Amino acid sequence: RRQTHVFVLVCCQARTLGSPLHLSLWSSCAAPLADMWSNKGGKSEGLLPGREALGPLALIGATIPGVILIWYANYHLDGSFVALGGELMADPVGWWGKKWPSCWDAEAWSWILGFMAWQLMLMRVVPGKPFRAHLTPAGNVPVYTANGMQCFIITLVAFVLGAQYGLFQPSRVYDKFGEILSSLNIFSLVFCFLLMLKGYYAPSSSDCGTNNNWVLDYFWGVELYPRVLGWDIKTFTNCRFGMMYWAVGILCYAAKQIEDMNYLSDSMFVCVSLQLIYIAKFFWWESGYWCSMDIQHDRAGYYLCWGCLVYLPCMYTSQAYYLTKHPVELGAPLAITIFLAGL
Image (cartoon, rainbow, N blue to C red; front, top):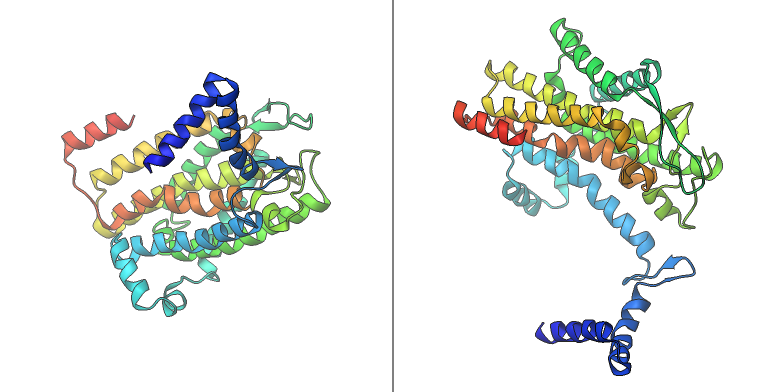
């Protein structure tokens, strides 16, 4: 390690000083690195051969079961990954067939499709000012309807009224969350495949392109701004499903705690309140998000769309999900201090 540090230091000094000897040293040590990370002919070579396909496949293969493992540890093992590891080691093959939640549960699909339909409807019918985002690399200017905050408020009001008048039972989302995640995995895999085909054969704009590798195209995406029947796909997946579920999900978990324990713990109150404030700020600033790297640089592929459709609902709500069955009594002074610090 010491020799490596000295080697790097000499190279950096050579690059800085600029004499022929120094430049020779710099060239000799930089050339291998330049070859490794070069972009010859528009293709990044990298360290590992075949990484354009193997890397995405490895990430897809790891992330899909990853969210299920996180849910399982939270729901069945009191959040203990040590206990989860013990179960996996005891039955590394059979565990997956026995413990994996069903992806064909009718109630889970009703929650998913009903919520998606509600959000798509709001995107279309709720009025908002037109917002013109930045000029794209291909010379296009995406135009959005800035109605995120209105849709957020309407969704929360509808949630409260629907729960109050018995139109649905929010605590069931907690009970069926494993099936919901498993079903969302299936939905996302198919959805991203259809997005790839759409990008190949019916792109929405000139902001699209292929990597000449269908695995990488599936993972990274083909289109930068795909739209279907006027609905902007990335606004739907990122904002109106992922971020909106974050708000609704944690309210469902709070409702579950009240149903089971007949009270709402102060830790759950602080957790849910701070997250709702953060999400409200996001929708207030949604037009700024349309000018962020997520929208301007990341194409609509697996890593972005799966991340917002599956990873975000699992991970971003995991604190409240855990607290549902494991309330922590903070006491008023500590609860107020954490709340104010979170603000």
